[in-house]
Picture 1 (cartoon, rainbow, N blue to C red):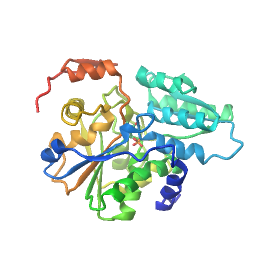
Picture 2: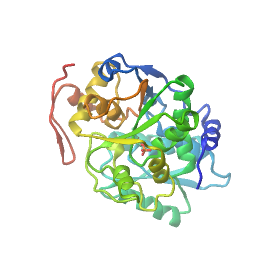
Picture 3: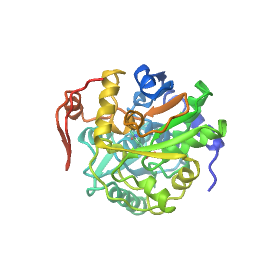
Picture 4: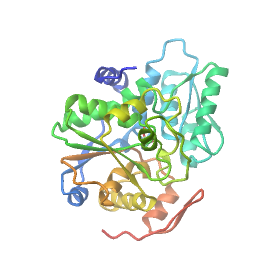
Length: 335
Ligand SMILES: *Cc1c(COP(=O)(O)O)cnc(C)c1O
């Protein structure tokens, strides 16, 4: 399957007026930390609080007239985007999620009128359930990352960034199933082939990183994480996002829970932004000192804001938090 800039331009037309063009703003604090101008694409400001709206709307709007309904697996944000898009089209949506998904995300999907099924304790189990439902209930399955229309929608973020700042040299992309990175890298490199795209993910259960290293999709164990939106595998039968990420991602950086916790505090105390763990891994990569000297301007995508608010409040107050089996030690913020 060949995926190009033309697919992203087609998605841009489908999502117009539903997904927003988000602000793209400098962070003075991160620019100082990075030694280069550092820009943030604020996808946490999308109507459902995450960039996944773009891919979901792109995919749902591309379905044929007589579609009965849609199903998907989700770590929360894709399901919310699909529920939103399905409601807009007036079709049924069944969203499969594991028990790792925070309650706030589950409730938000229900509030949009979608049917929620909580299946098993991992994203991979939820993925198998949505594949089963697609066959048994005649619904169309929309993968959160391995779907050309989804990748096309996410790629519109890359178009907007390069349109605003054609001089970008490095993009730090939060990475899980790779739909976002595949779309953004395709758009950015079609416009400027020399731009560097670095995939950032948590160090436990880094599915795309392990798969690219093995040169084939592999399964990884799943853990509770502050970056809950980055959990889950890439699917052993991955057709598209694996291939594009393998070909276009220049480098990978893995960050720890403590580094994510600190970056969430930086976003709040320095930039005054509420951002979920998955969305600050680009900052975490820079602040941890793990990123090599980056060519600037540097940009990252603040992918979402859909947090469990009590947990967020504890982290900001420097208190310990527990998420499933994960314990993250609290540290009071000091720049
Ligand atoms: C889904 C998601 C990601 C990762 O996107 P992929 O396309 O799966 O790589 C990052 N951040 C947030 C908030 C997400 O919901």
